[in-house]
Length: 344
Image (cartoon, rainbow, N blue to C red):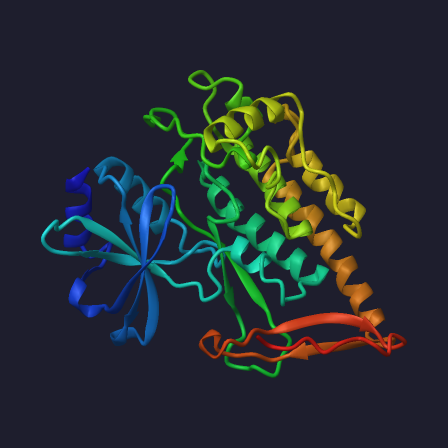
């Protein structure tokens, strides 16, 4: 496996950058499979994310690099730039695209930001398109949740426009090709709330696959619709390990989150279909994209009609360093008390 990396670098299929090229390196987060650092990359005039594996497993690392390298065609997969090494360990680290708004969970939890349904559908479509890129190559992510999806602004050069955001899938530490002959040693639960009940009920005998990703996507859609962490208050006062065991058993028995008010009915039907207990009853990714496209067109038509009777309140906030965020939302003109949300 290490020979594969050496050959890829030697033949310039993958670029190897000097660690000294990166400046202002700061530790940021710890994912399921690695540590994430952010850094400035002066030679390219951009910020990047640098991923270092928690426990360096060459086979896993190569698989993750292969998946990233084969997914350049999708704007909804975090872009992979190449590799770097830091002394004295000299172990490879991945250099990837930086998402300025960080995780989807972080984005949804910002209390001062109103996310309308047009944006929610756009994000849902982005995630579905990213997953299609993987599934079309018969690759299962197997650890899909709102901390493994990142958000970046798409129109930062034009601060006067309505904000647009792009969702991208990242963290392929548990991903694997479902083609025959591929060795699978992945046994991790991941985040229980997003985990396929068939896997929870058959650990050791049932392997996470493409259908497991669809289940996870259903829970992600629920979190997008509600802005809440799934099962956040479930046995919240209990020990975490005991809580996870109880939640796993409850999910196996059919426990699912409750739809939130004002969620479009067809969106509810879609995520409920995704989290069906039996994998064979879940839609495939192409069907999800088709359903989202149809509903998205309806949302845009409704939004266009509302513009004649509503005012769009938009507070343009540029840099997070200034403590400013962008806020958008539709407010009826007849509501004279509609408040202009203040920046923090």
